Length: 259
Image (cartoon, rainbow, N blue to C red; front, side, top):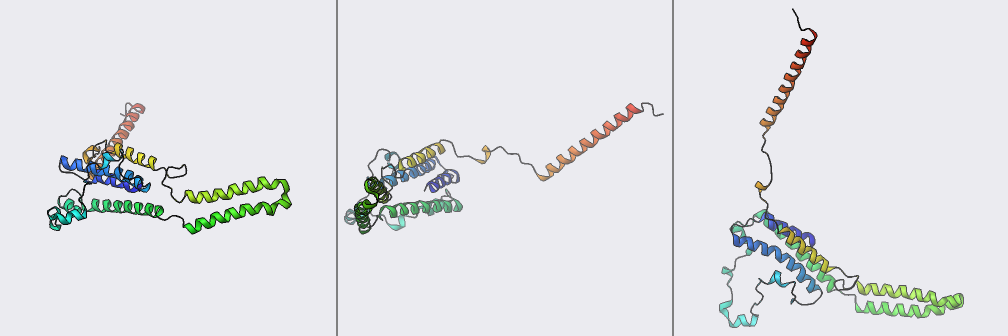
């Protein structure tokens, strides 16, 4: 998901050329929505709702008070007809804000975001089966209780520490299974979702701090092949003239009066 958010942020900021100030503001709002997506996904996986102060700055401009389906049935005038609701990508393409190649890249990264969300949902909604967890717990308890009776005749007084160590190891394995069942919480072994969201937030703020680069911002020199050939020839001629001058000066020093 980090790669997809970075890719979307880069494509929106660089490849989208807004024709007006309003479109520029919409572009910045679209980039900030990526941070809102990461933060809202964190609270969604933790099942903590949507009323959070750190989430409001990124989604406060989204219309959330959508009438319920029952209200729409009674208020037909609020239902938007299909002919007045064109697809967003077609509208942007007609306005030439997003080109075909840029739209393809944006949709590709957007699909990666959806796949990431679906994968996290699959982990969250697929817990360890109850029968498996109960069976493992009962097996560990029975084995640890019976282990002391099996070793006491051989190890005598050392049976107690050995059984204690073995029990700690086995119950630790059982606890690990419970920990990895839901890695989105606040435990020490869970994923650092807060750190992930803070990193995304800092990257977006740093990225949008600078204006969109243009071709004129890059220093370059337009040099054709003909100019390169002329420079090589002039450099070679200058070297030849220098050699002839050195030979002539040396000859004059050796024989100042040739006649």
